[in-house]
Amino acid sequence: MLDWQDIQVFLEVARSERLTDAARRLGLDHSTLSRRTRRFEQKLNTQLFERSTHGYRLTEAGHRLQAHAEEMARHAAEAAEGLSDQDRQLSGQVRLGVTEGFGTWVIAPLLSAFGERHPALTLDLLALPRVVNLSRHEADLAITVERPSSAGLVISRLCDYRLRLYGSRDYLARHGRPATRRDLGRHRLIGYIDDLIFSDQLNYLDPLLAPSREPQFSIRSTSVTTQYSATVQGAGLAVLPCFMAEQHPALEAVLTDDVDLTRQFWITARQEQRRLSRVRLTWDYLRETIEANRAFLMGEPGESLACPPARPER
Image 1: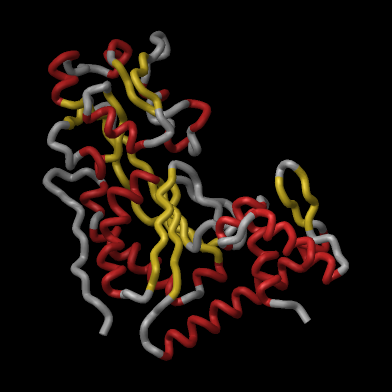
Image 2 (image 1 turned 90 degrees about the vertical axis):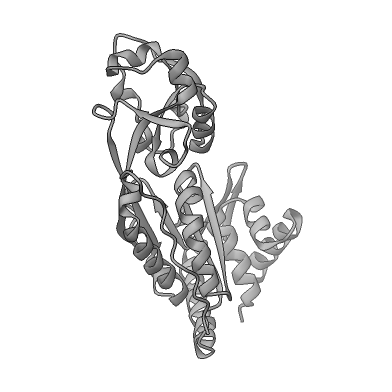
């Protein structure tokens, strides 16, 4: 008879592929998790993992067991949710992975009302300058700047958003306003680190710069929040989402006729997670509130983020 706790430990290691990551998520120390994993293999008289300096990789037997274990985990989640449904109040945890800027400036404020409406739900917001890996169960839902291509995912286009070139009033007073894109070669720029950009959709500056001039960067960062802060402080010009920059009184858009970029956000979940009521509810709430803020995300004048009122469950 398989022990459910052993299955949970096995699944976390299989999903994480690194013992340290699995141990952190399970709340165990590294050595304890290593012993439990080996003890489980001994109990089954089967090697489940190939161990190396690069991490833990499933053997063929491990892959077969994972398929059954994932099904067991899904049934356990559905059973727990069914019990909470009887009490007419959703409970549990929803983990949402989202890009750093969108998560901080848009999603976090919108989720405040959602949390008030469903106080028994715990929301984990992973606002990160990278793509969240759903196949490794890092999150239940993900919002990405590129349309995912992995099989087994439910994918929907969430919204468009606009980006423009911004500078602070102080910077523009000291260095002047660029009149054409060619003038950007004479300005200090702020952007991403080329070899650390996690999506081609974030490579804004290269198509804007004249090939005859080497761009002069004052600051480059993997974090759009850092780029935003540097722009506010007058370090240079940066391409920023309107949902971040339009709200700051110190920032002005320049070259608005030449630099007007539109990108998309996509919302994604694994099929089995999408069926859970708490995940489906979060998905629908995000789609509804983001749609209500379409003008704000496209940088329309005078628009601000419209957060729905909190209406706690009764």
